Image (cartoon, rainbow, N blue to C red; front, side):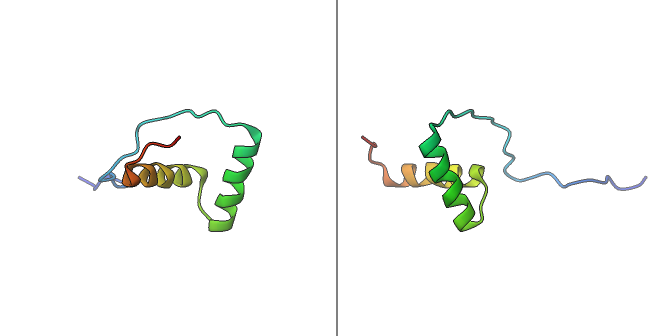
Length: 60
């Protein structure tokens, strides 16, 4: 038998889709941040979620 080819399974698969609606100004700020830091929008949003959870205080 030959070994399976293809990409190896991830230890932490990202299989949940979330749709977010943004206004134009927020989207533009997000794109500028991503370009400046050379990351994807998805990664920036993930990092933002982690920051919110680490702080523990509600955003008002």
